[in-house]
Length: 367
Ligand SMILES: [Zn+2]
Image (cartoon, rainbow, N blue to C red; front, top):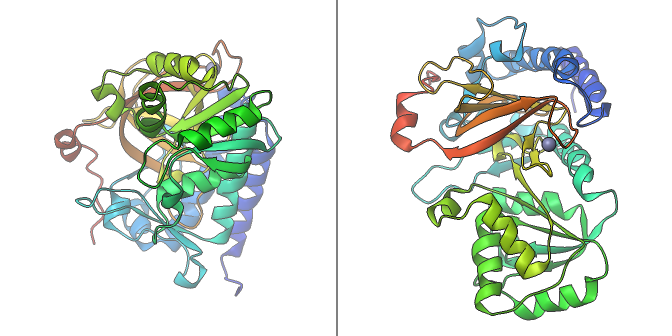
């Protein structure tokens, strides 16, 4: 790689990242965390102003912030409209695409090797808090076909990221998304005495695993299993399935008591917000959330529902360190969750209806 004149900027950021990364994931108080995260985000801001034309056009006027709420953000849909990139084309190591439907343009996220490595490291450190350090036998609640498709989808990336925590992976579904009953029962028979990891996307766990087990009148026993799942609840709330129903059904069909949802997005892989034993999503040391009024975009106080802005210390190859999502949610508390984890904790209420999105988050890039 050629040495660029502004490598000092990147080095400064890398140092700040290492310091924050080495801090405990959930032990910093909000004040302690912000004291490390804010200067790091400001370094990332300077870096992206220098290296991304789109980002510079939007935010060149912004110089500093004294709190996370003052930090500028990009509307998430801009990742569909523009190639937001802060590295040379030659340094792009992978382009991650969000799994949009055919009617939608997928978001593109440009990763260089360093950003990709930070994503993996962060995911490992966060997930180990819930799974432990050992690689566990893993049941992937998806079909093996998903890993074979041409473009690297966010779903495949999610599975690949989580596969690091597993060994001897078994796919629970057939290529046609039907339940592979033989594979699942064999997995359960083999591992019922020990800890195992299950991973899948929320609606697939419900529709193709829990419901399919119920319909087949099959129950398996995985009392030491931990299920990690992610993805929106929309398809489940449409079927009147809430988190409590979801967890109860998993206990009934599989004996699973440790079930953790996580909130994250393709635009910020690695900085995930995992649900604790009390059912709250926690911000890790490397990331945070700010809730904003959907119309004025002003920051909202704890308890009020608005749009979720996600901040992450990870991305240097694309300007994705501060993103205004189209998800609604609210902060539930700070430093005082009954589970003992410090920092901010929150809940997600789902996606903003499309018509509302158009009226708000009017942060546009002039092409
Ligand atoms: Zn908690």
